[in-house]
Image (cartoon, rainbow, N blue to C red; front, top):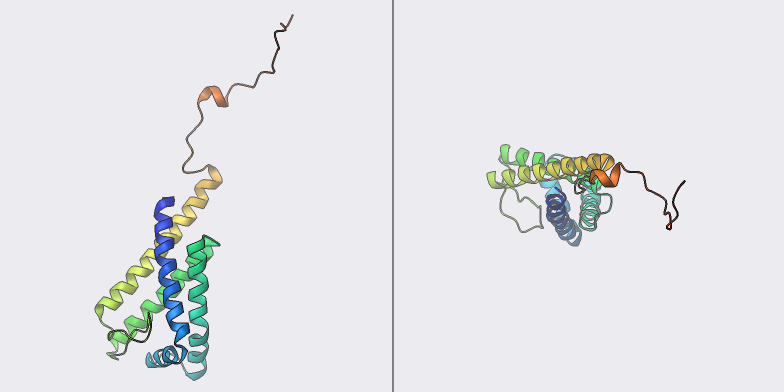
Length: 167
């Protein structure tokens, strides 16, 4: 399970870092994309466009480095769920806009974008469940540890006698 979590962390972390970097490098194009979704007003759209790339980059870096894994997986799950809802909403309403997920040059939102977004939600949620299970098992005993043999656990350690007998 730890290897599966590592793979999910690296994939999700790399994806979030890349998405955040492309948005941060083109802030005005990303702001335009946020407004194109027609979900937020001018003030809220500006706040989202300013904060979202940095939140993605921080969460991505945390996942890649293994720092605050559970918290960054919660953030990744929330972000991907929010993206999936926004993309599905735009597709349902037939807006015909670009996704804006990895920069301004994207295809028009379609069913594949919605499925990809839902897959990312599932992957981040699955990673969170795995991370929480690992922590639960580590509290009881590591997943990777094998039980010690009976002779190593139940026998009290004898003090060295140095050749002296007890009488």
